[in-house]
Image 1 (spheres, protein in one colour):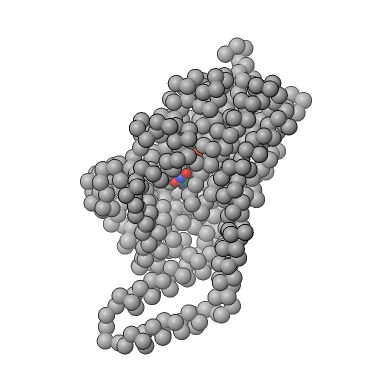
Image 2 (tube, rainbow, N blue to C red; image 1 turned 45 degrees about the horizontal axis):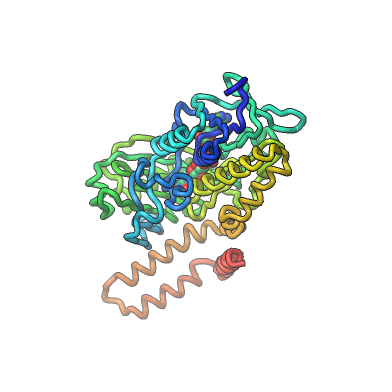
Length: 432
Ligand SMILES: Cc1cc2nc3c(=O)[nH]c(=O)nc-3n(C[C@H](O)[C@H](O)[C@H](O)COP(=O)(O)OP(=O)(O)OC[C@H]3O[C@@H](n4cnc5c(N)ncnc54)[C@H](O)[C@@H]3O)c2cc1C
């Protein structure tokens, strides 16, 4: 690098930053990825599964070479009341086709090695303090050590994105538009994991927990199987945490004690505890994504599809599209806002914005009815299965009648109508 000047600087070595870096390096552009952690992945946490197709688009060789924990063959949706659970499970044997569990510290490090092999420079242990501007154009970064200059900066610094805030491209996130997630990792022998989840050494299982103890708020629990450990955690909207004065750690403790969950992590040795924010604003909260000399990708751009636990794929894709835009801008020697607006067009033509648009109202619709969808209905579903599976000396018709009547007597008719209306509105919103 001459006089601290390079063609593109990327802030953040998460999936968005690395995808941008490797795409630029493969096109023989000079690119520097700056990361505050001592290595890529050091500061990062997620559930987590990555998705095969979107990951292959960036790393065609990843199935053979990357540190993958397990390929998920089962996805369980577990509806919880305090003592019961009802599980819907989808299982497939096409296990290398959809998702795999990974550990970010290992996986992100592998990704950055690929970017370095392709020719990208990587600067770990370097905190970007601010962006350098000249006549309204971003021309570089100020780190805790020195200043670096570039034609384009790609901001991929994650959910808090202080740099997007510096440019006033993003405002401070409101509690309504973000969830707080906590996660614990339990070390367990692989044979025990295989036995408990009916897996082999390569296959994995994902569980989503809906209902108790997150039965009054917009919150979900998750569990992922790794090779020799289990990740368990939950995420709850920050506004609900504030309103209900929740301690998220206490909620996780309660979740782990549930009779359906406790045996899954029994005798596990706590290895790790972490917490992180998840953008929840969706389509309506996507900020302006480009300006003179700068683009924003991944979580920094609020690109997360919460309903499907999708974030890394949107980060990979947006990072790649930002890099492709940067390549054109470098070839044309034009780093203006107008030139970089191509990034917005590329994103709009991709599944990233299309999917976020599809779900744009769903969380807003559901949030006021959280107590219904996360508390009341899991309870009613469990009640139904209790009646259906219980053999006693009572006539079945009498039991079913009592159950059906309870739908109209447990709560007001108005509540039921509101819930039905919410479902119709949400489905119509998705199909529109
Ligand atoms: C609990 C939880 C569960 C999740 N589960 C899943 C899942 O199962 N599947 C999925 O696809 N997604 C999941 N996600 C979402 C996913 O993790 C994110 O969408 C994804 O990591 C975004 O990638 P990114 O590169 O934009 O940001 P990040 O991964 O957050 O990376 C940002 C990087 O920037 C660095 N950085 C920040 N500020 C600076 C600075 N000033 N200077 C230098 N470096 C800086 C950080 O250290 C970090 O390495 C989950 C998220 C959470 C919190």
